[in-house]
Image (cartoon, rainbow, N blue to C red):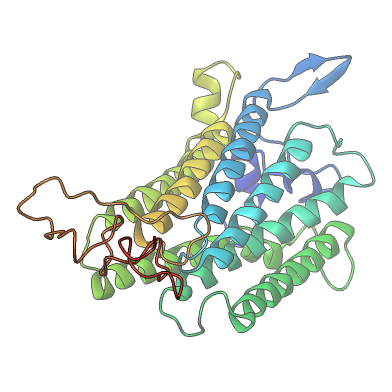
Length: 328
């Protein structure tokens, strides 16, 4: 595999950008999943599209759970990562399936937007790796706008590089897409690696519980397996199952599992402060052992156990009425 060249990559993996690189007709994979016909329309990568739909559902569930933890550390920052992942999966359905044909004039623009969101999502993951170190207090405008502007900047740069490469202007060329190669393949690996290292340091140095390390390891393993399956064994898998699925299917599944482990890890290291959480109820304790219960003398305690025989629901008796014996 030559650095800066998509030739070998695209012959193995059916990436979104492959039909727009190499030559005027793009680079076609050696083996790819067979298509199906639905309502007189060809749908490519049907199994992968099904996984995309599952990923959308799972992402919505994870977002709902994150938003329900009102006082958890880094809630607003991590939920942005899942919003971006949702957008990626939604775009992938239209691009992988061929709903937007590769020969369409709008396909390069959608592919460039997809590339921008992929780069921006990994940038969001990278910055979330620093949230636990509290360089800026989480949930504050400083933290949130730093995250938003960083992701927006990465998205803008990646989008420009992608569309300039596809359209062959501003010095970029689809025959030699080195900048796009770095953004599309190298940048995600760097962000994921830095995030993993940062979280391992965070757990070891600040937490007494070591169980979250298991979530990190599983997430890293799923991410690594996804890359290996897609770029090394996609053709082998495709030939073995007679073109029913290819490496892109397993790549999408493993990436979904990796994202789920990001959620699982964040959930395991964050504890919600129930005192300030919305809708929380105070625990009600009942003393069942009479030896542990405080003595309640009729002369010293009211009906509700509060000091003072004359207190009723916390209010003193009205003035001028006296005791029960003096009222009549």
